[in-house]
Amino acid sequence: MNPYSSHADDFYVNMNLSTEMELPSSRETVLHYFEQIQKKYPEMRNFYSRDKNDFILEEDKDRGDYRWCSIEPRRICSGQVNPADVEDAIDQHRLALELAPYALSVSPLDCEALDLLMGFDFTYRGNHNSLITEALGVCPAFERLSNLPGATIINHEPSFTFALDEECRVQCRVSMEARTNAYQIRTGEFQEEQLSVYVTARQYGSLAADQTYLTTLDRLWKLCREVVDNYVIESVLQPLARTIALD
Image (cartoon, rainbow, N blue to C red; front, top):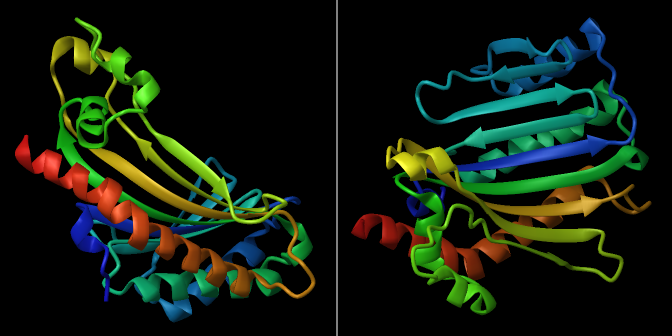
């Protein structure tokens, strides 16, 4: 079951493991890793390289919901777009992390950062920055600026990051990405583009002796869900959806 798909036009869950050392990139190693992924998800059969150092395995994108995973020089990524069951997407990320120590020689010491991202995309034709301002408002200190006569807002992408421990190694960020540029605002010619809301939980640094990548992922997943369920849906996603519907 996916309780989040109704809150945006597209919903996705991505995992990124950034490493301190470069990952192995030999033909045999890369193919073996992806073959293990494919055994679990046989529909992932589109394999290709990008920039000669990035390798991607994914399902067909045409149907709108699909899985993907990738290996970059210092990053392992896994994602699922519009999953029917959100826990199934997390299981995919668990598999990617479970295979990494054996197939790619990734140690818990090698962790630069482990991210789990929940993304929500709204398709909107118009000024994304004005939409965000209308739906969510602005910081009180900037409210008078936003009402300046003749002013047009060309950049408003709120972002808020907080730490969950004294060492600031576990952090969560709520951010937005508008895709409206000054040319579109100047000409009034807008295309239907994606306005994105991201909730990212991140663990920085090498893992402790009693931690694994899987237990860390589960902790980040719990954090993401708590932030989205208790704050982001009501305060961010629903106001954006209502404002778009009234436009």
